[in-house]
Length: 119
Figure (cartoon, rainbow, N blue to C red):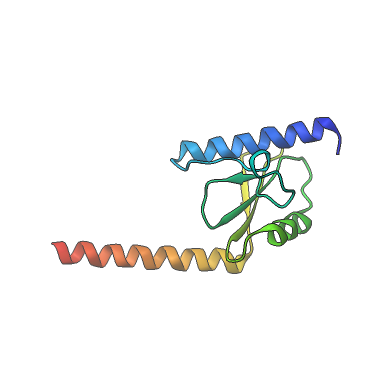
C-alpha cells in the first residue's frame, strides 16, 4: 500500500471516530495506540469491531472477512466504507444485524414496561 492510500485510510479512521464522538461515543483511532495489525481501526464502541475502508471500490467480502478474523470473540464485526463524495455506510453480517435489532427491541420493551409501572 502506498503512502497516499495509507494517508487516506488514516483520514477515514479519523472521520469515523469524529462521527461517533459527535454522537456522544468516546471514539478514537485504534491502531496507533494498540500497535497490532489486528487492532480495530476505531475503538470506543464496546462490543463492536470497526474496520474502516476509505476507498472507491470496496471488495466487500474480503473486508468483512478481515473484520470477522480480527474481532474479539463476541464482538460484532463491522466494515465502515465511504468513497469520495458519498456518506458512510456500515456493513455487517445479516445474522448480527438481526441479533442487534432483537436486543434493541428487548431493551425498548423492557423500558416500555418500566415506564408503564411508574404511571
